[in-house]
Length: 287
Image (cartoon, rainbow, N blue to C red; front, side, top):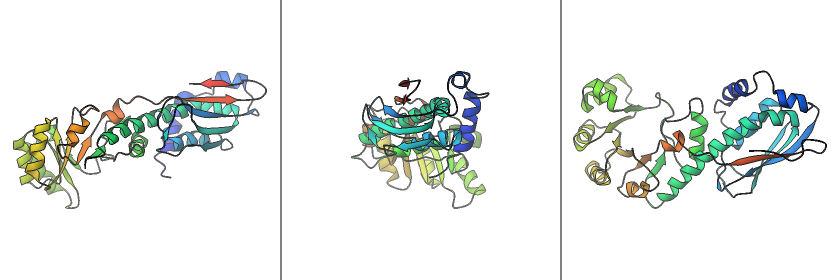
C-alpha cells in the first residue's frame, strides 16, 4: 500500500502525545504484560483508515498484531468488530488514542462522502474533494474520500493550474490570466479557471480552458452553462453544496461537484477500543 507519508505524520503525533513516555501506563503496566482486544464501530458508516491504525502500532512495537476484520471502504454496522489487536499492553495503551483519532476522522470523511455519492448515483456527476484539508493529513484524508466513493481533486498546487478569483484580479481578467498561464507552462499542463457569471464563462471558453469551475452559481445558471459549453470543457460546480441541494446540482448536468465540507468540517465516526487482559486492567474501554 502507498505510504502516504505516515512515518513522518505519526512521528509528529507520537512526539505530541508521548513526548517523554506515558506517566500513567508506565506506572501501572509492565512492558512484559500482554493483552488483546478489539475495535468496535459504535455507529453505522464506512470503515476507512485501518491501514493507518496498523501503522501506528507497527511503529510503536512491531510485535503487536493488528488484524483488520473489515475491508477498507466497507459499510459497517453498529456493534461490529472491525479490528483485532494483541500484544504488549503497555504499547497498546500508549498508541490507542492516536490510532482511534485517525481511524475516526478518516471513517467520518468516507462516510460523509458516501452519502453525497449515493445522492448523485443516477446522474453523470462525480463527487470530489478540495484542498480544504487538515494540514499534514491531506494524503490520507483524500484516500478516505476515495474509500467513500468520491474522486480526488488536485493534491497540491503543483498538480494543475486552477485560476481563482484573486488570480484573475491580479492578472487583470479571465483572458489575461489564462493566457499568462498558457505562456509560462508546458502544453501538457491542464488549465482550470473559476468563473462567477456568463461573461467570464464565455471568456474562459474563448481561451480554451480545459476545465471551468462554476463558483456559487444558481441551478439555472449552471444549467445554462452546461448548455452553452456543450462539452467543450469539463464543468465543476462549487460553493454552497449541501446534502439537501446536491441532487439538484447534479441534475444541471455538471461533470464534477467539489465539496470542501468532506474534509474541513466532517463529523468523526465513533469507535471504541475494548481491551481484555487476564490479571489486571480488565475490560478497559477507551472511547
